[in-house]
View 1 (cartoon, helix red, strand yellow):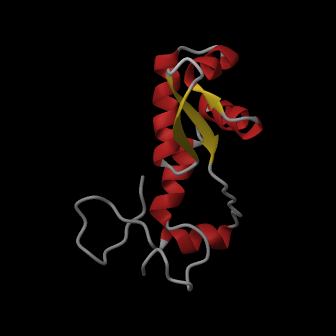
View 2 (cartoon, helix red, strand yellow):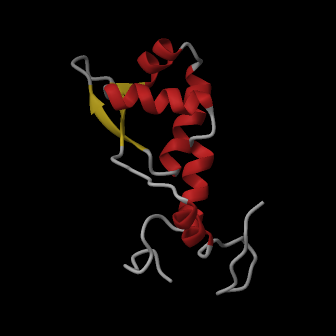
Length: 120
């Protein structure tokens, strides 16, 4: 079934795995919490969280790939390009049934079309 199929409530299995993996890091949970309070740019966010900009960038890329945050480039007053991060609105209601439904749509790279597998 397709992602937009109304018979599937909630995320696909692949989307759920991506989101759960992104949120499995304490650093990434702190990043989401921080940008949920206020959009922020990388340097200031790194200082507030007490981590390096390089490490923060890694976490932000993972969160962005999962669709949990997004970035917007803006020019500061002095003409410097600033990349601000914000949270994307999201909500997941996890129950055994919603997980079972999502699991039916899981795919593993290299599997034949139509074949679903449980990721390990």
